[in-house]
Image (tube, rainbow, N blue to C red):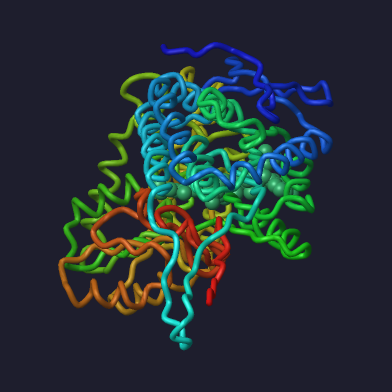
Length: 486
Ligand SMILES: NC(=O)C1=CN([C@@H]2O[C@H](COP(=O)(O)OP(=O)(O)OC[C@H]3O[C@@H](n4cnc5c(N)ncnc54)[C@H](OP(=O)(O)O)[C@@H]3O)[C@@H](O)[C@H]2O)C=CC1
Ligand SMILES: O=C(O)CCC(=O)C(=O)O
C-alpha cells in the first residue's frame, strides 16, 4: 500500500511556516483506517487569523500593482510545482479524506489545469469601451481587486476547491487568507506548499487551520477582509453570508444540492445507469453536485431498476489507496453517522430499501468509515431523504408516469445546483433546459463533474447566486470602475 509520511503541518503567514499561538495541534486520521495518523494540524487562534489578515493587507497594494502577466507567471510556477508533486498530494488527499487514488489524482490534475487557466487570464481583456453621449468623452470600464479575500473551503475537494477560489482571487490582484476544512487541512497545506515554493511575495497567500467556529468565524467578521468565498453546508454558508453582509463585505456562497436525474421513457438506459452510479456514488456521494433523486418514467422503471441494482452489486468498496477499489469511506466518523441516520429516516418514513443501508464492519472495513451503496424506492418528495442533502452514497428512486410529472418533482426542492435528463427526444431536452431550476443543466450526462472553464453555481438555496470558475469568477473577485475621460 502507498503511504505518505506522518507530519506536522504549520500555518503559513507572511511567507513563513509557523505554529499557532495556541501551541495545540489536532490529529488527522485516515477515514479508511483510524489507526493510521496522517499528520497533525494547527488549532489556531483569533490572533493567528489577525496576523494572517494583517500580512495579506500589507501585501495587497504591491500585489495589485503588478501586471496581470507577472501575477500569471507566479501561477504558472505554482502549477508546475503541483504537477511535479501530483502523486504525493493525491496520496495525502486519499489518505486524509478517503476518495480513491484515481479520483484524487484526477482532482490534483484538475488543480494544475485551473492554475494554468487563471495564469492565462492575466493577459486577457478586463473591460469594455462604451460610447459616451459626449463626442469628446472616452468612457470605458476597468476592474479593481477587492483587496483581502477570505477563502473558507470544505473537505470534499481539498485540492480543487481551494485552487478554484485562490487562483482567480490572485490573478485579479487580491491577496488571500485561506481556512481549509479541518478534515482535509493536511492536503490543503500541501497545496499551499506549492504556492510558498513558487516564491509569491510574502503575505500574498496565507493559510490558517483550525475550527470553523474560531478561525472561519473570525475571517468572516474581520473588518480588513474585503470578500469571503465559501463552499460548504447550507447552514454555515447562510451564517457566513449574514456576518459578511452585516459589515458590508462582499460574499460568495456555494452550498448544497439535492440533484435530480430524470430518466425518460425513451432514454438510453445503460447510459442513464452508468451516469447515475458515477454521479451519485463516486467520491462516496460526497459532492454538492451528486445525484440523489432518480426520477424514472414508469414505462422503463423496472428495467432501469434491475440494471442499476446489478451494476451496484459489482462495485468494489475499500481503502482508496488500494488498487481495484471503486468507492472509499465516508470522510469522517461524523459524516458516516449523518449518512446512517438519513438511511434510518428513509426506512422510518416508509421508503423501501432495495440494497445497502448498512455500515460495513468486516475485517477489511472495521477500522474505517465504510457504508454500503444504498438505494431506496417508493420515495416521495415529502420524505426527508428526498428533501435534505445526505452527502453519502444513497440514491432515492421515484417512479412517475409522465415527463411533466418528472419535471414537477425535479423542481420541487429548495436546492437548484445541478440536474440531468436522459432522453433522445429533442422536445423533452428543450423543455428540460428551459424549465429546470438549476445552475448546471446536463443532458445525457451525469449531474457531477464540472469543467473549469465554465461558470459553476446554483439557483435557489444552492448558492448566493454568483458563479465561480471560468471567466465568471471575475465578477466576484473584482469591482467594476466606470471611467469617463474628457
Ligand atoms: N457544498 C459542498 O460542497 C459541501 C457540503 N457539505 C454539507 O455540509 C454538511 C456538513 O459538513 P461540514 O464539514 O460540517 O460543513 P461546514 O459548512 O460546516 O464546513 C465547511 C467549512 O466551513 C467552516 N466553518 C464551519 N463553521 C463555520 C463558521 N461558523 N464560520 C466560518 N466557517 C465555518 C468549516 O470549518 P471546520 O469544519 O474545519 O471546522 C469548513 O472549513 C455535509 O454533510 C454536507 O451535507 C459539506 C462539505 C462540502
Ligand atoms: O462536480 C464537481 O466536479 C464539483 C463538485 C463540487 O464543487 C462540490 O462538491 O463542492
